Length: 610
Ligand code: C2E
Ligand code: CA
Ligand code: CA
Image (cartoon, rainbow, N blue to C red):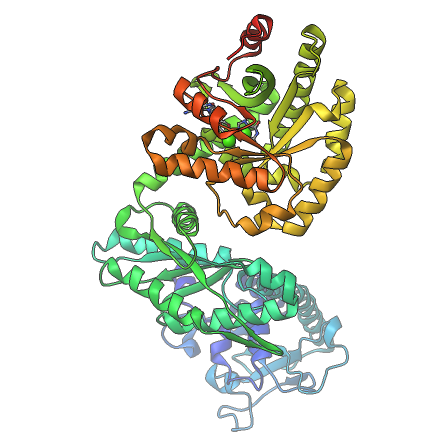
């Protein structure tokens, strides 16, 4: 047996043979581990009663090895039959196998490895053969020949098994490659991108002047393209975008597609930090050109978030996340923008995430409360209505005002369960007050709605069910919507509002004057009142312009036949003015701040007149 020294120096056996007709044979040879050949050599040794070595062992001349018998594998032409030669002479002819000449063998046996798979050799199928070389001329007895064929057969069987395994590996690797490439654009996927990014991070750690930038890019309003023009067109757009992105970067940069309409780019070896922004601008210019489609063209644009390696070498997934945070900022700032990630963004993003988690728990933990603010009818000066205003009693932060968490609740969709809780709780509470403080006109309730709630399917039925459960008459409920409702989908909004009106509930248009204020749509909405935003009311005392503004909104309301409600009344003089202008009702700190139920009860009990 070869010792460990020769083992280390040994060359692959296949190198000793002439180049095979086909690569397949060579790889088949490479498939059999050395151990198998050594085992075969031992068997041959037993059969022939002689020391046996592997051909190709030993460093200097193989011809000088001591072992009288050596074995090897070699590639052969397809259809070659087994042969046993007793004596090839001292100088074998050129026709003899090169390995025979190389090993200076006098006799040899060569047996093709015909495994189960090669029982019927395919055309061009060149498998390996098992070669037994003797340094002396010898006759091969029938018994020896059969035994050597057995050794070859077991090698062939092993080769078969290994081939199958190798094919399996190949397929697994193919699948892995597949997973690393996006099927549509051929771009790397997130997994492959992260691998590239990991290498860049590694390199930046070792070489101080190696800098890189990660760009996260998202196509603005791509969903609209998808929904309106169909998947095929959308796919075509994505392919074009991928091409354009590639044309904006250098060969060593990586462009990957990480979700439907999100791409990330790794810019390697940027000269300075402004390169990231320059590439972002170049990309935005490239994407601005229309994408031709079968029946027209599509316009795309992209928002881009950038994180630089110079802002701290975080792990790859974290860098991707930071680029995403910058992207979200870019989108929030308006389309077609790019933003650089900075640590302040990080802090904000963390706080936001924390808040989001807390908000999720708040629903289950019952941390919400409803406060109530009275609305006063100006003719009588009495409280006729209350507005339900949500409060969050945070375990550490105390009472959190709605403007600090409602936008997040809307973004995350949490406003749906929260809003439906507010509606149910407020209806229940006001019904209770109606029974305890009976009046000729029962106390009314107004509840703020979010667009998200409103666009829920079966929202109208949900309102009806909630009312029924609480026992509150639909006529006592006013739902407050804002101008943004109509902007989403004016026709749908109108239809839904009609349904709610049929139910008996009333509709208030809240915060009027702060939104996009296209007056055209106002006439088409079924409304019962317009609430004049508090910023106008509060500035009324400051001069004639603001007073005029309030009066214009009031006139507008009356013009379309709805009531005018003034918000944010803080002073007696404001109240006097509003009365004079002819507003129907008012609400504000002058009467009462939003208060917990117990406090509002005292007010109802006192029944003050203003
Ligand atoms: P909003 O609907 O305009 O509610 C009136 C807001 O004005 C309340 O703020 C109230 O405290 C404040 N306010 C009332 N009178 C005065 C005054 O005289 N002076 C001043 N400076 N402010 C006054 P709040 O309670 O912080 O609510 C803010 C906003 O949060 C609400 O504005 C509403 O848009 C939203 N919101 C509150 N509760 C809910 C809810 O249950 N669901 C939804 N979707 N939004 C809600
Ligand atoms: Ca309101
Ligand atoms: Ca308001």
